[in-house]
Amino acid sequence: MDKVHRDPRTPDVHGDRLGKGQVVQIATDEARRLAAVRRYQVLDTPPDGAFERITALAARLFQVPISIVSIVDSDRIWFKSHHGVDVDQIDREPGLCASAVLQGEPWLVNDARTDPRTLANPLVAGELGLQFYAGVPLTTHDGYNLGTLCIIDQQPRELTDDEVASLTDLARVVMDELELRLAARRTVELESQLRQSAENVARTLQRSLLPARVPAVTGLDIATRYHVANADEVGGDFYDVIADAAGGCAVVVGDVCGKGTAAASLTGTARWVLRATVSESWTPAGALARLNSVMVRAQEEPGDYCTAVLVAVAPVQDGRTTVTVGLAGHPHPLLLRADGTVERLGTTSPVVGWTLEAGYTETAAPMSSGDLLVLFTDGTLEVVAGHGATDDQEVRALLAPLAGRPAEDVARALDDVLNLATLRDDAAFVVVAVR
Amino acid sequence: MNDGAVPFDVRTEERADHVRLVVTGELDFYREPDLRSALEALLAQSPPQRLVLDIGGLQFLDSAGLRVLLVCRDRCRSADVPFRLAVAPGPVTRLLDLAGVRSWFSYE
Image (cartoon, rainbow over all chains, first blue to last red):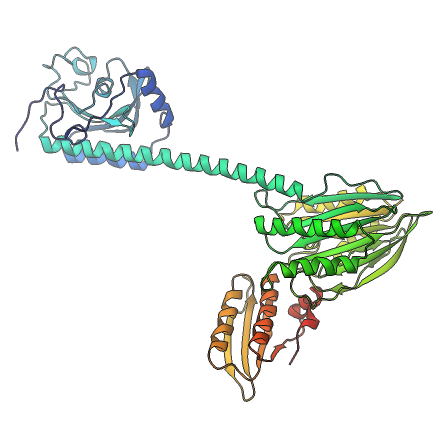
């Protein structure tokens, strides 16, 4: 193999990085180079295996005692990996790597004691007695030299063209690793931005599926809640409170089977069909039948569906009212009497949206001052009673001591339980108290 | 998965007067397509005289599983194959009741 003595300022005839008409644009603007160094966020990071392996390999391959991956900062040269020397940074001033990064090519000093570029350098003249230095710039894809992969010996050396090419290849491995880490970090950042924006969309959509505010209804005290299981997903629960012209109101709690935008769109449909129905003279059974027919006709085969409880609350007079309940495959609403007894209201009709065969019925119950009606989704039931629960015994036990309290107190008691749990499903509920 | 959980399985049994699809384990969103394709394979051959979907050995049924029962019923109806469910009292029948859909099916 030919030993070549190279003037470091002549182009590297071997490496294709510079050859074959391909010109790497070496940015000479130091401020921009430093910005690139910052962008890779490598300064002062802990040692790590990938770079340690590369310097160890370089030392073995070229049979030199010292190999370094260096990053040239504004005032220092920091070593990402330093094989064979127990120093993790040096001042920029005497550093040879600082000279190397100014080049677009390998910087070779075969005998530093006689080389005019280095003979006065304290690393050469001083204790370290550096005599051989070969550094290849770590060049970013956009042309900035962050630092070098270099090998150092205390004896004069010469590298063949092949060896220079190998060192150059190793420097590219270092750079690939740095690029990979930057890309990975960017991906993570991007993902977190996307997640953030998905959460914003979900929140906005969710808000549009819930009433902006609960109307004031004479003689009633109403509290509503929606606990979200997953911030970046639109859940399928919904509730609504609609005042009617006569002075009563409709209360709706439902759960659309499915998640995401398809479920959200169905939730919107369900909510507006019910709103449109309730504004006329209506019955819960009739409204469920109408919603069922709309949803079945919108699908080719049994697919998305919803469960719901609809309650018509008659205008309150002298602290008395009647509630009429339509229940479509949904947990029974619970009526907490002022004396602490709990009744389960409604008889179960089929879920909404699967078949036109479904028939809907309704049942009525009187309520008077101090009585509370609690409507909830199975997400609430699951948390209070345990996963897969179909029995509302636990909810009844939780409610019993709250007899006669304002609706908001009951809502807070349920909040306390829901806030402690990791929700698998959204949980919505509405509490209606007769004043 | 809990100890003692039975893995999901669909088995076809030829009986004297009907064909029986026996489903065991947990029928949910992930397994529902398996039942569908078993049914389609069966109907694609020579349609049976009667089809019984035996879910007596199911340990769990979610809403997607419930839906596929109805899909199977409708699919058989359009293929002119009488359809029956075979059930055993337990969580599955409780769910049929809660969803209010028990009356939608004929039972063996």
